[in-house]
Length: 309
Image 1 (cartoon, rainbow, N blue to C red):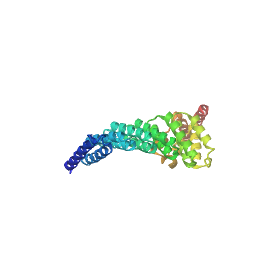
Image 2: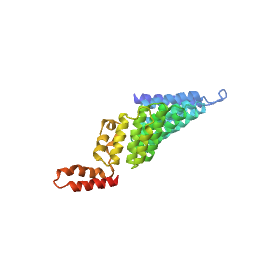
Image 3: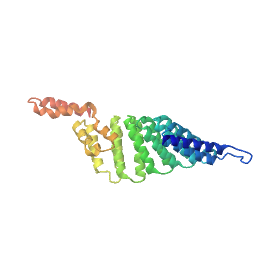
Image 4: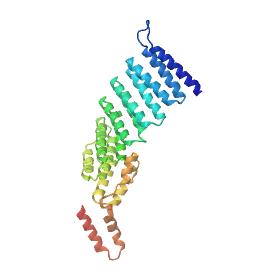
């Protein structure tokens, strides 16, 4: 079966080369037919699992589609060449081809196709290179945003934000989540704004910036339905516990279903959040009544704790 497909591929290549020849009666190469034959050859090589030869055939197709001024089809062929590199586990090369295809899609005036290809490239490279995946998702978001397709843009931004959190690039993650929140607000998806506020608070507390975390909640009071909502009460309780170094209160909020069932990267931020000083003072104060003569030390601990706040 494989040998038959390889033979078929070579037959198509021979036909393509014939299409490119000129003569006294044929002054111009037939780029359209040549591209078509190389496309058929590529499929045959692919079916025979000859991915390197399939890649070369797709690139030849792209070359002749470009000569024929059919940029969209040229871009498609280059993207397929990238997929052949993916089959060979050569991911960096695969991404290079897909990015080149995206530039051609943009040049051709089909930005949506470019953005979707960038998304696919991000998914391919994510298991191997988170930084590159962030870059691709952000580029896809930018393309969708330029086309006023905010729902698609915010989906791409969300992917980038989560990876920034995983990479511990928290300053950038804070900016990205704020941009997500602004977009959700623009098309009035307020429940998602609540979720993004929670994500912001967790990011800022891990950055050690209580003021920024508190500001995010205060600004969200202007969102319809936020004040008094489950999300709002949880964040107010979390901030109070964090500010008062109440480890138990912070633990209860961070391990509540509301936070534990967020996207995995944010849930990890929640369960790993620690109060400044480790909350040891609260624990000692709470344990004090068990001792017979520990009233005075407990007071000292409480006074010391109040001083810290």
